[in-house]
Length: 177
Length: 203
Image (cartoon, rainbow over all chains, first blue to last red; front, side):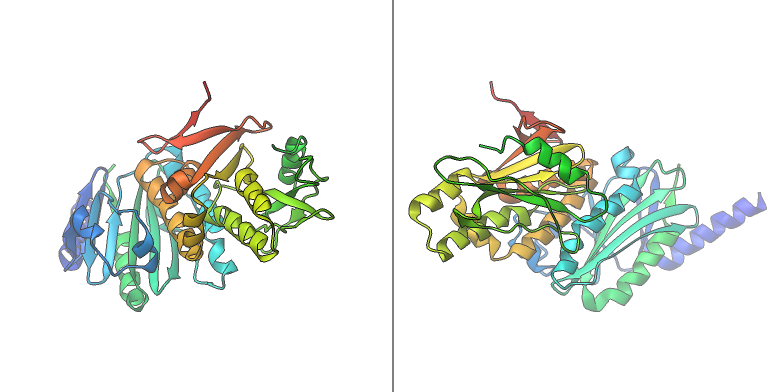
């Protein structure tokens, strides 16, 4: 019981210290840093500063949950539960193949890894293109039954800040089931 | 018209182990007889296979090409190969009849372990594709992003997400066909509102 109380206290402390916004959705609680602003889909679609690719793309980004922390845009999707969502090894392999076009064009920035983080796993894929960093993350529970995809995109100059933000998210994300 | 031995070439390509793409140029021996030269498969370089376009009676007329992908369907680079080849016809001074022949009959095939995809260009869209190809690397980047976007949104596998991404980028400019493994029964594929592949069979 004492341990449980301590754990609750610790968790509350972490959220209070690190985050003012807590993204809470089905099966997951995700702390976001102090100063993060929630964006509407319309606001996301009017962001003009991200990448050259997006400038010529006719697509509109509209993930269900979107935040901005300084120059870092954070897109959060719904939890996936099926085989296609939960097979991180397969996702990594297909992304490694797909983004190999970067290396063939002299861009060696692509990196992918599957990490164990406490009672979670995460697939992290990132690369730099046109002066911006794209970071795709899939956070998975220990039973490998739920996977939360999210995306961080930011100017290359904000890489250190973004790395700290991602560490915080990965360390403090909690699956509630 | 596809080569009569297409299935054998598909099998040859799939039989190659490793992570390097293999592929084959599909060359007509003449534009009038529409018969194919013998096909031999070649290895890609640094993972990716690129065709060698020829357009003469001695080496053959490259009307199509096929190569292996491991997880995803045809990519923007595959679409833009039509534009590159069409430009080569201009560069070598091919006749208008030959250019029209290429535009009307060319195709690209992508072979996967569980299905084969073919893409063609719709008439009237060559100029659009040529303009898009000026930003070819950007479109490849958009495509790879959009695959993940589709996977994350629709919770579909990477192959389905990639076909959706290709159609989102190129729309009516291209046709995408799919044939079950070991067949050449190509049928048009499209994407439904949930991001799933649907096969449109002819009545």
